[in-house]
Image (cartoon, rainbow, N blue to C red; front, side, top):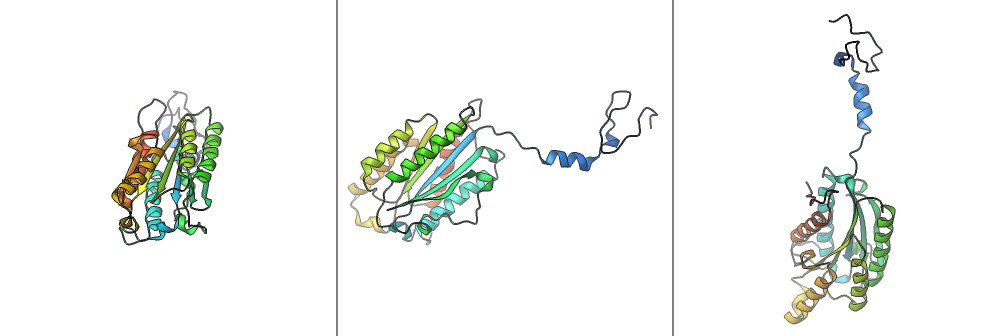
Length: 259
């Protein structure tokens, strides 16, 4: 071994007189410990707000045999799990609401990595007054949450996506649509909507009535590509993933794909 290599404290990394780094004297434990605290910088700040119908009809059985509220919970958790497994997981924050005759913030805005997948987010578990479907108060609260998030990260690449789900007619629909329009007018806010059809109670509806319900939900979305109508909870999950991927863009403007 060269005589120029000096004996040093092994907790330090020094160069010999030749200017070449002596890899034999690197304390790998100390190096690993120092690197473990490093975090990948956030490429963007993406808030995803789930707004879930918790009215009485969501307790009815869905296509999988589970209650529709349970199916929605499973779909949302699969979306969150995929975000948690993403290499850009630290770029996402999550907020969850339930609504019916009342509205409840199930999960306050939190990083996706802090989201507890063991906690119930079945909207029916939180709603006590479920004999109505009043979306307007929830949208008012969601708008405030989005504005607060965008303001807090105003100097960053920041966006908010609101995903609204309902399985039936909304009470005071025009009021809800008006608030939704004001929400969509905010820069960097996008609204996606899902009409969660039913094989059970909607059999009592004539086709024209069902078409009206679908169209109402479609009009809440920023555009038709952010709307879907389905009875399949797996299709609901796919729609959520597609919506998140579409609005989440890295700083160079390229579309971000959830890995």
